[in-house]
Image 1 (cartoon, one colour):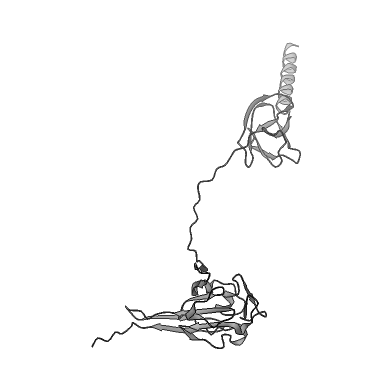
Image 2 (tube, helix red, strand yellow; image 1 turned 90 degrees about the horizontal axis):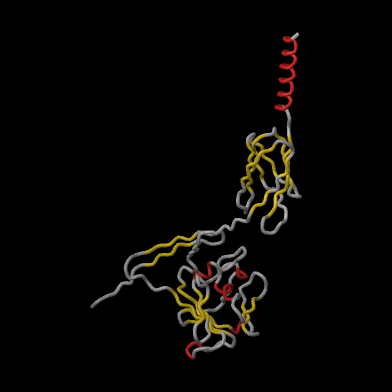
Length: 261
């Protein structure tokens, strides 16, 4: 009789022990911003042991199902410091988590680059433009053009779309004088402005006078454009090849020869 009672108690103990081990509890709560007090959605919540992971919903709520025991909850939220909470859970437990904003400071960033000063304004009101600046001018289905670059300056109005006509202070296109090293340049446009008669490989700079005309450059009612071409090199022979959709070319600059008698 005693033996049967012992067997009964042993079976009862094993049944209760297995029931306790198989018990699951619920651990849930909300994730809050510690400073503002509002809930945080899409925050990542970790529960250990068990390596369980979940994210908070739009209301900032999360939930786990786990056996009772010692637990640790940790968080990972973009822009916030991590939180770690250790606790003992023997039944359903509510754990609200408060995280604090983590200010992130970037290291100093220094940006450097080679800038091209498109237009130089002289003290007497003229504009000087270089071939490098002309090549940087926006263009559509055409070669870099000197007159189209001048169309972007204040006080100058362009003509028909696609052409290189310029109108300065209400004047006509024929009232602009273009001088190449002091010589008059006739027919400044070519092929409706799609191809420029000014070869940038030879051009050193171009200066436009639209407010004040020097006496040696007089004759224009609206403006005067003075072209300055490159000088020969004094040290060595130099060559430059240019390839394009509309035109191509090769430029050679030879040293200047000085004859001493």
